Image (cartoon, rainbow, N blue to C red):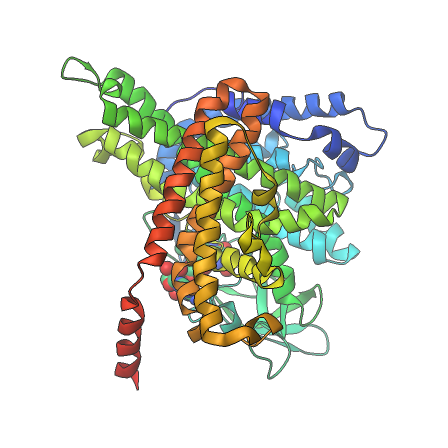
Length: 570
Ligand SMILES: Cc1cc2nc3c(=O)[nH]c(=O)nc-3n(C[C@H](O)[C@H](O)[C@H](O)COP(=O)(O)OP(=O)(O)OC[C@H]3O[C@@H](n4cnc5c(N)ncnc54)[C@H](O)[C@@H]3O)c2cc1C
C-alpha cells in the first residue's frame, strides 16, 4: 500500500488542520487563556507530522501482516501478533499513546480534534492498530470522566504510557443494540462488588482490565439501575476470541465473570448515562475510522485508475470510472469536513462546557458515524470495482480495505441505531416547534445555512425535501394520534411505525445535507473547493428527493409482513 507521511502527504487533511479548525477558540480552552495560539498550533502540527511519518511508513507497511497473522491463540491464551506489537511499541516510544490524557496524568493534553486526526491516519494505515491504540485511551477517557482521584492516579499514567491496556464491556449475548437487556449483575459485598455474567464481542478483552456495564440495583429493568465497574485480570475469564474476517488482528473476546471482584466507577445506577456520554465521543471516532479506511481505498483506486489502460487509455478517462472516482473524493472529503466539525464541537463541550455546541454535537454525532461508516463501505466497494479482477486478489490491498470497512457500521451502535437516534431527536424538536415544518425545518444548523449560486439552490432544495418528508411523516402521526400528540400524548412503537421504517432514509438525507453544508462553508474560504461543494450539494438534493419519494410511496407492505410474522409467534 502507499507509504509516505500520512499527514503532510494528505492535502485535504492538512487543509482541515490549517483552515477548518477554530484554533483561536480551542487553544485558550485547552492550554489556558495566556497560551500563545500560534505556538500551540505549530507544536500540534509537528506532532501530527511526526506521527504521520511513523504511521505512513512503519505501520502502513506492516498492515498486511497484521491482517494475515490475525490473533495469536496459544495454550488457552489470546494475544496480539508480533507486527501489531511492533506498531504499538513504536507509538509508545514516540509518546503517541497518551495524546488525549491531561498532562497531570502523564498525557500530552491534546484536544480531541488533534487526536481525531491521529486516529484518521492510523485507520488509513491499519484499522486494527487504530483500534488497539484506542483501547489505551477509551477506558482512560471513562476513568477520567467518572473515576475518583485515586482511580485516576492508579490507571491514567500507566494507560498514557501504554503500560496497561483495558476494554469496555457492554454487549452480552441477549443485549446488543438493546442495551437495557443487560443481565450481568454487580452485588455489593463488604469489601468490593462481585460481578456475575457473560459479555461478548469485547475488543481487547484479553487486556489488563475491563470496564463492565452491569445491573447493580436489584429488580431494576431497562436502562435504569446500571453501573460501571472496573474488573482487573485475573478476576475474569477470557473464554475465547472470535474468528473473524474484519480487523483480523484485533482480539474480540467473550468474557465470563463468576463472582468476579470489581470496584465501582462513577455512580450506582448512572451507568447508562455515563457510558452513553463516552459512546458519543467514540462514535465520532468510529466515523473517523471509516474515513481513514475510505481514504486508503480512494487513493488505491486513484493510483490504479491512472496506470491501468483499457481501450487505449487509462481507465480513469472512461466516464463511468471517472464518476466513481469523483464520488469517492466527495464522500471522503465530505466525511472529513463533517467529522472535524463535530470534533471541534466535542472540544468546545469537553473544555468549554458550551451548551450550544453540545446541542449541535448531539445532532451531528449519529450523522458522523452513519456517513463516515456507510460512506467507507461504499467507497471501498467502488475502489474494488475500479480494480476489476485484481480487486479480489489477495496481493492487492482493496479486499482488506473492504473487509475492514464492514465492521464500522456495526460496532458502537449500528447504522440503524444511529438513524433512530438522529430521527427521534429531530421528531422531538419538531413536536416542540411544529411551525418549523412550514419553514426551513427543525434543524437549526440546516435552517440557518444559505449559500450563493448552484450550491445554494441545490442545498435549499435538499433541505426542502427533508422538511417535506418530515411533514408527511408527522402528518401520518397526527392523523393517528390526533391533536393530543402536540400535548405530549404517549407514543407506542405502532404509532411510530412509519418513522421507525424510514429513519435511515431521513438520516441519509440529513447526513448528505450536512456534508453539503460544511463543504459549502469551507468553499467560501477555499475557492478551489467550490466544484466539490457543488457536487456534494447536488448529491444531497438527489438523495433527499429520492428518499422523500420513497417515503411518500410507502405502501404499508412492510407492516403487513410484520403483522404476519407476529401472528406466527402467537
Ligand atoms: C469486532 C467487534 C468488536 C466489538 N467491540 C465491542 C466492545 O469493545 N465492547 C462492547 O460492548 N461491544 C462490542 N461489540 C459489539 C457491538 O457493539 C454490537 O455487535 C453491536 O452493537 C450490535 O449488536 P448485536 O451484534 O447484538 O446486533 P443486534 O442488536 O442483534 O442487531 C442485529 C441487526 O438488527 C438491527 N436492529 C437491532 N435493533 C434494532 C432496532 N431497534 N431498530 C432497527 N434495527 C435494529 C441492527 O441494526 C442489526 O442490523 C463489538 C462487535 C464486534 C463485531
